[in-house]
Image 1 (cartoon, rainbow, N blue to C red):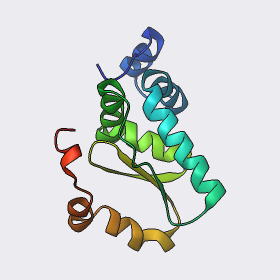
Image 2 (cartoon, one colour; image 1 turned 180 degrees about the horizontal axis):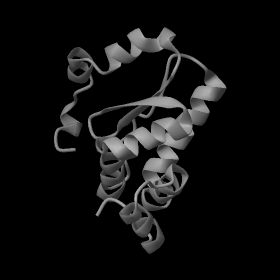
Image 3 (cartoon, rainbow, N blue to C red; image 1 turned 120 degrees about the horizontal axis):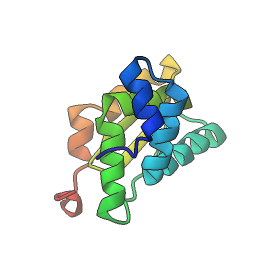
Image 4 (cartoon, helix red, strand yellow; image 1 turned 90 degrees about the vertical axis):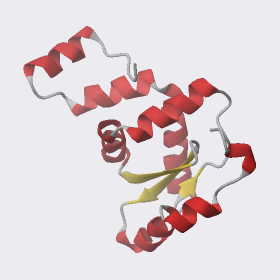
Length: 130
């Protein structure tokens, strides 16, 4: 299961629209490694500026890696995180998370990061089985 959904949140979903803040809080508590990774990258981007901030260190274990995969592979979770933090998220190799500002001045950098070329250049034998 991707998220630890409370009965109240599930009931809300069964009735209709879900409060996005409640959904984001569910993501925060269910996927703490992914949340901390994205939060710290957003903070780094705000402090350092630049076109993007990224993490190139593999997760400490498979549970953490799974959290990143669940957070970034789900359109609903990824979209909610992007709206909550006001950034665009990018992802490579099961662990390289990057946050980009919404500013269109970084569109070219984001396109390079998410390109086929960018993916190929980010390969390494150590990450083959991630």
